[in-house]
Amino acid sequence: MTGPHVLALVVAHPDDDAYGLAGTVALHEDEPEFRFVLVHATDGGAGQIDPAYPPVSEPLGRIRRRETDAAWTAHGRPPDRHEWLDFEDGAVAQVPFEDLMQRIGTILSEERPDVVVTFGPDGLTGHPDHIAVGAATDTAFAQLCSDGGRGFRRLLHGGVRRSTWDLWNRARIRRGLPPWDEHRVYDLRPIPDEQIGVEVDVSGVAHRVVAGLLEHRTQRHVLSPGVPPDVDGDARWSRTVGSEMLAIAWPPRPPGAAVLGDVFEDLE
Image 1: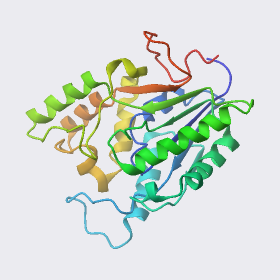
Image 2 (image 1 turned 120 degrees about the vertical axis):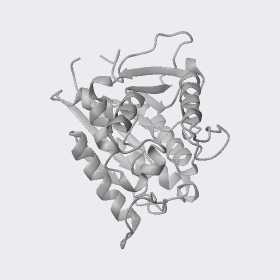
Image 3 (image 1 turned 45 degrees about the vertical axis):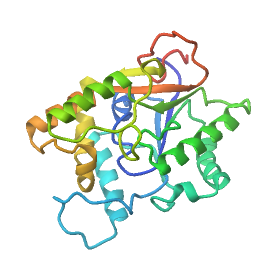
Image 4 (image 1 turned 30 degrees about the horizontal axis):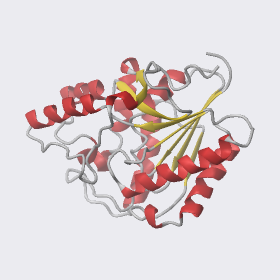
């Protein structure tokens, strides 16, 4: 692949960025013109803490910011630009939409990324913060991609195929965990198989994705419940993160189009 490859990921909370795109970042890291921009709407300060985590004496958001920095260091390819918007965790949906969209749009307009990745309308888990961030990013993208300037060639939403979701749910039941309910907020939600337009094989760098995930220690109970923190548990995690699935939100994807193997594929 030739030419600049600027990739922007816009998410709500620390650890939203730890999976789903980290493998793609690792695959492109050696390209001289690859640039990775990461935007967090909140610092996750209102989240819960893994019961196994030691007692804390400082705000959770401060810890989670450090965990995020440590995660990308462990991964091996920190963002070229990382912005914290400092909205209140759990209240992003209450932020005036125009304000949220403009904050995100300002960063995107400065960077002019080729590919933007965010949440789809379901927020992946139904989380209101996710849904608000995704909608604001989509609107900013739509405005910027029509101005005739460079970049803004593809908009992607993180997603999980229903068939994959069913497989993972059966595995949860076998491990004695409650199955996900796609109608319950915070549970992972699937999308129809045919909506996945990009699937990246990142199995060769999955160990680096796991290295980043392991740094989010306060959120271990959320990221991988029931997976023990040992070699076997890490191996199981590696299998789970070995493929990154995304829906193509723009440009429109023709029915029956082939699934792309990379976020930048066919953009040359």
